[in-house]
Image 1 (tube, rainbow, N blue to C red):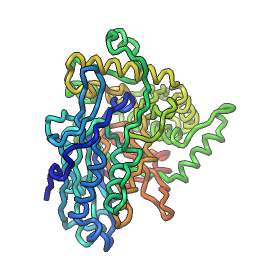
Image 2: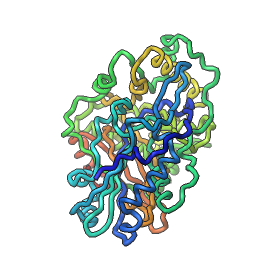
Image 3: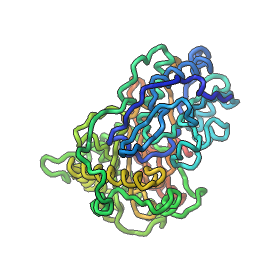
Image 4: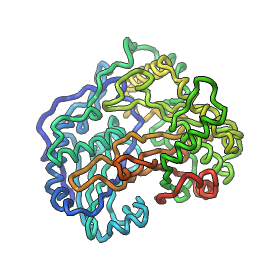
Length: 476
């Protein structure tokens, strides 16, 4: 059953201004599942009526999720709440003959959920204009046979990143339990100016020459043409998405090995995320070359960097402007496992090389270029930017570590999710989420979403360096 939430929304709400640090979001549809074990509280606390009421409460408090994305005459950007918005949220619920035990035995595979119509179709992987009437928020709850439930959610919003989505789901759960009066800080736009005194009328072509190498823009092509241009021509049937797990204990051991290797100079250090990026990059690049998916040669390795930290901005709040911190790795760096410490050090150095001045200049270029596209009447300006390292025609591999996202915080009164699943369609770009919470409610593993062409995935599964620390949780 599908419920149009439009009748449940307020007739007016406070509009929120989007600041410079949140308007440039490289976004796509963000689907996720959260699975709940059988509990007697599901019938009472997660009934369709109660979930609908609490979702309405949560939406009333978060008008930004229902905003119209507008470029004003003075080139400022805002999201204004409009109850006539055709992209209103939808809420669906159903029952299935699939059991929780069957789901668990298959590693909570995304494809198994699809076969039982527990998800909602992802249109095409790219944000659409609001007039296309695609809901900004889509929720579907499935009640499992014999107990248990699965909550599927997907957002279609340029300013809602993954952290915002999971924060909203957790906030919805708080509202369901009678809490959530105050909107959490992760769902509030933060009024902090990265840029000051930006010349909105400056010549775009002049500024474009100063564009950061990590970010590309093209206003001469349609977004669909850009997608084709930067995507390696392979059949979707040959792409294999998998979820792997690595324990935090094994990752700590790898970090200790790097620290004891003698590779780090005095005063140098590496984070666990740097080491994980190096391990994933080595193994994925090696698998691609051994399978002859990509020719033998050097690779571009990157780790996603939240720009707020080096810029000294608040780390909480809506929008996390990121850049892919790139470094070059020779074939030797990725082919030889004993070069892991050297690659981890290189990743760390590349992250540290992104100075506040460089990032400020990058944001200024983006702001000026974006304003120019809007001024020239380019439709959906945000869809004309892309990260160069995500061009799958190149030998590029990297990691986005999202291990602080509150993916397991949505307790509707029947316990926290025992497992979560998302979907990563991008080959060679690995997304890392926290694994399920352990006995102490703290995660003790990380889940890595890896998508590769079939020959490369077979080579990865045969790599002893990978299989010694990484375990297959499920295929797609």
